[in-house]
Length: 413
Ligand code: HEM
Image 1 (cartoon, rainbow, N blue to C red):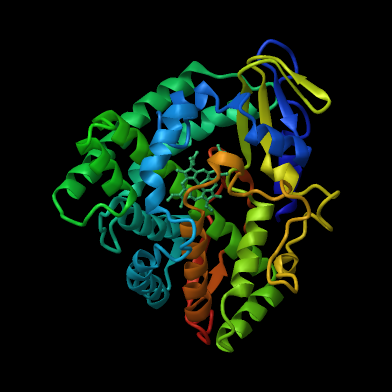
Image 2: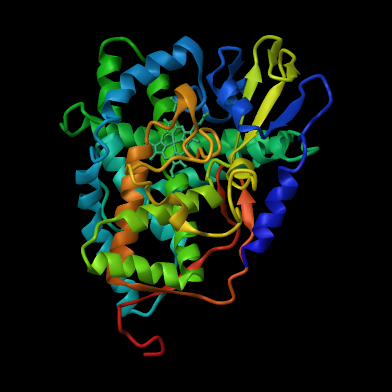
């Protein structure tokens, strides 16, 4: 089932997307070169990404970006991996209730929709200080924009791809719809007094101090929704699909959970999923001056296409790279897992733009997988022919539908 995915992706990232000057787009596959570019002052994020998603943290660079990151960073404390646990725990009872209801009604559900719903409840509360009910579905108002951003992104990265004007105008229209939802979030947040500890609270406090204006707040909320929802939700879907394909691994996780041995096995499955299906499968940086980097000369305006997908499956660094083997992520005797090369594994990026929300993402994914595996059994509706859509994140092209069973319940009951 997953072999088609692998073939397609190798095709996409098998060659330089645009080898001719001017405006070359060149693939970077050497981890040393990747690390050097991501840390270099001579490479910046591309203007185009900013045009797509607005001037939020996800798309900006330089002094402007540094100032914004300084405002938001304290709400994602690096050394407190469990900083957002309370919001995650808050979302769990409603999530479990919804799964239980689907089980009792023997109703097939779209796995991605369900994951988007629980992830967005966590993100709205942990990042924006806004509480949604378990059945409330607001994040879908961002969906058309995410798809439009994805279509443009894809057209740029695919070999021979061209930007099409229709896709750009679709993007502008869908952004207007997303902005209505952002206005709703801001109105809701301003009507409650929940302090300033979360990201939106810090941004609003910075607005009161004159450091950011209303448009800036909109850009940051849009950027955070783009960064925080589809990434984690799709990773969960891939992880559950992979576990369904590898029942022996699901069973060993279950055994560890029952024995109260902690979450190491779940974490390894998540890391391995992020290796095989990195949501941010391609990333770009643009040379802002002529630069010699190792054996390559970059001209001003050249773009480096960094393919996490290819790096994560490079046989030079990964044994049997296309296989799902969570045991690769078992800690070494000193208790730490080390990648085969510092830049051969980077689902959350590297360098100054390292994902600000990685602790939250890992914690929520762990908690959701634990809740599903310990309370339910998923029965995937056959046949599952999954192709990837390479949009803004790598996601299954067709809806993955499942029936939820309680442990021990007869599938035909
Ligand atoms: C599985 C989940 C996630 C993955 C795989 C992921 C991946 C990434 C990657 C690869 C980058 C680097 C982009 C670059 O270098 O240009 C990034 C940046 C970012 N991520 Fe995440 N992310 C995830 C979840 C989250 C969450 C939950 C949040 C927030 C709540 C978040 C917020 C951000 C922000 C704001 C940036 C921009 C950081 C900066 O440039 O200062 N991400 N993410």
